[in-house]
Image (tube, rainbow, N blue to C red; front, side, top):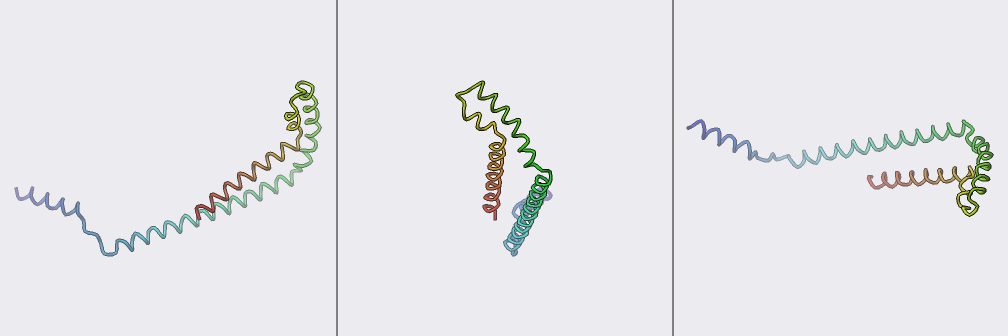
Length: 125
């Protein structure tokens, strides 16, 4: 019986462990280190994203994308003429058939996506 009482008392002592005097300072130190690590990670990820964007933009410029879009304009004009013949009342469709509009819409969507990413970064800082 003595062993059973001892075990119960021992279990209660371990269940109700006393709080250490430096518990709050320890918790604050851990939270500070975690916050610092995330800030550094965010900066590294952002820098990698900017570097990737610059590399992608330079590759687009070096690959003569603008000349390709202009040459695609010829096929876009043929497509536009076909759409106008099939559906003369759908003027808005023929406007999107030209290659320039597609490039501008894609550019606008890319700018909107960058805006969303920027607001997300600003919120978390």
